[in-house]
Amino acid sequence: MIPSINPLVLNLKESATLLINNTVKEMRAQGRDVAHFGFGQAAFPVPELLVNALRDNAGENSYLPTQGLLPLREAFCEYMRSEFGLNYTPGDVFVGPGSKELIFQISYMVEGVLLAPAPSWVSYGPQATLRGKKLIPIETQRENSYKLTARELDQCCHSLAQEQKLLILNNPGNPTGSVYSADELREIADICRAYNVLVISDEIYAKIDFTGRPHASISTYYPEGTIVSTGLSKSFAAGGYRVGMMVIPETLGVLKDALKSVISETFSAVSAPMQYAALAAYSRFDELKDEINLNTEIYKSASRYLWSRFLEMDLNCPKPQGAFYLFPDFENFRPQLRKKGILTGIQLSHSVLEEKGVGFLPGSDFYFPATNLGIRVCSVDFNGKAVRDKWPGGKLTDTQIHELFPNLVMGCDRMEAYLRDL
Ligand SMILES: Cc1ncc(COP(=O)(O)O)c(C=O)c1O
Image 1: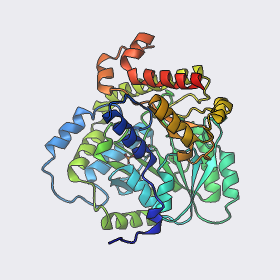
Image 2: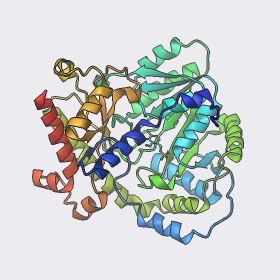
Image 3: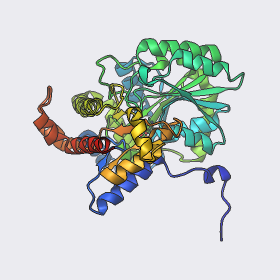
Image 4: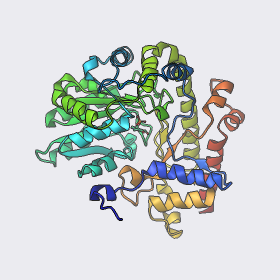
């Protein structure tokens, strides 16, 4: 029997990040040593506090409330208040199986178009496709570290007439490692207010920030129209726990009611033991701070090492300010690449993977045109636990970098060799 499938689903291909991850795993299984710059997963183990809470609550077998465990939502509100100065009540909070699912549900429920800066995270677009709506990429500039400006947003909204607009803004950003300042967000907020744009502020990397400034959230400047999403996956190093958190302000009450209904008819509630682990994470956050700060310091060193190597190779690349991504481009090598028959980012990423064993994703997976030669590099191909155990702190010497981040060094050496051979 050949079942007939919803055409919106048939249009979808496997998520680009998961695909590259599987390809690299297969290559490694065949004995090839590959530098994996393609998958953005936390490099560190789950904090003991969460592991113990999960173990202690393995016997919890009740379905929990649709919105999530009340003490967890209370602890999360306190965390948002003390860490970011954001004020919510437990009634505003939703717990989901990963923030990806919660973002999908909002995108599914809300009518109108989806706007996102290009480049933006790979999954926003396919999620919109699943609902039969368009993602409109707003192209950003390398000179502005690929951050959306108020002016770019204004021009885009102006051209879209009256239809409802949902903007997704990710800060700190995947795939660029860029971080918006408070002033930049304030200006974007003014435009959102002027055009009644609904915003999902994806702040999953909020605690992985290298700027030394307090994290700025657009919800501070546009509270009435901003939904914030975050979760355990990145700074808490617990992606596999699949716990995402979302806050929807009281002003968007209709959306809250709708989300409650959709959750109750889909995943019902996140698994109980995981919610107790999340409760430990947020209610005892003070105990995790040192570990999270140290992890961030290590991410910063890894990212900044890659950045300095890319500049030495004559790639253009904004300085990474957070998360674990960089977005270098090969524009300076376009003529040599053309001679080799390479005209698109996909051809480029296949070529480097085949010839040199370095995996990364092309800019077209992030809503740039196919011919764009930007790529996304993840800086997490290192053993976080081993690095932390040996962490010397301060500015690392070359010897220390080789010892702590061998795959990052290997990947850069190979990219350099690829460019030399052109
Ligand atoms: C920008 C961004 N948003 C959301 C997510 C989803 O995180 P999760 O579903 O694990 O909470 C990711 C994960 O890679 C991401 O990079």
